[in-house]
Image (tube, rainbow, N blue to C red; front, top):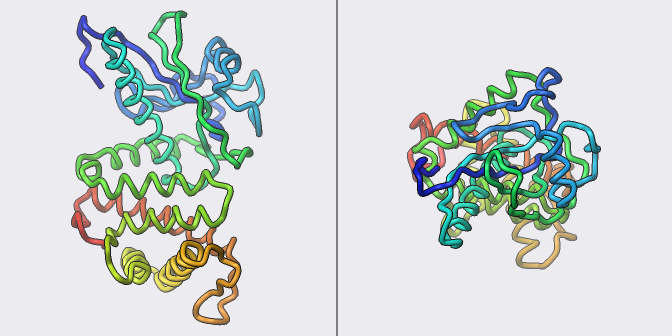
Length: 300
């Protein structure tokens, strides 16, 4: 965030969060969780909530109803008053930070969560606002639990780890997180498969390897070398990569069968398991990278 000088104006960006369930004792708190100075999860006040309804930058679907406290991610930032291009750049950078919060929430734990629209405005003023509408996603019944203070502290710690220099300096991890997040917004199973495996291809730096599927499956299993789930993780990702190849190279998955033959699993269940284990792999790589337990170009 920019330094506070006479040449900048303080602004705030607010992205409404759909699906987030918070501890009851924090439903009336202004600031629910501070992730870092200027970046917080907040409950929108009545005026801002009404404003977001009027500008259709919230989604009036699912469990959210008017009058309920609507949580949002808020970023305070500084933008130069002119030229307009500089202010627009500052707004886009702020949007990127808000998007990173959403993506890391999706890695932190399972659940359906998404943003409504984003508004930008000057702090402590009732003047003009800037709107960033977001496309509707297919999953309109969001539900994501941070049901107690332990959950909130856990996400704050995960955010700190994910924003550490050790992790942020590795673009392939950021790419893995973005593709994984994208997989949770699509209604099509085949698109989700491609997004998940692209995420893991980036996470494990498969690059131009001739046997990417094998590399991904072995690298994922290696992360859980002492776990009884190791073989299951290997098989799930080996199967999912073969499914990905069928989708990309044959144009469909109608003839896909699990390997080895006889393992009883259908495509929807396979994708659910791949999503579950991909989330765990990404979170584990982030934590181990931050603690220097994984070399930058190593899978395990």
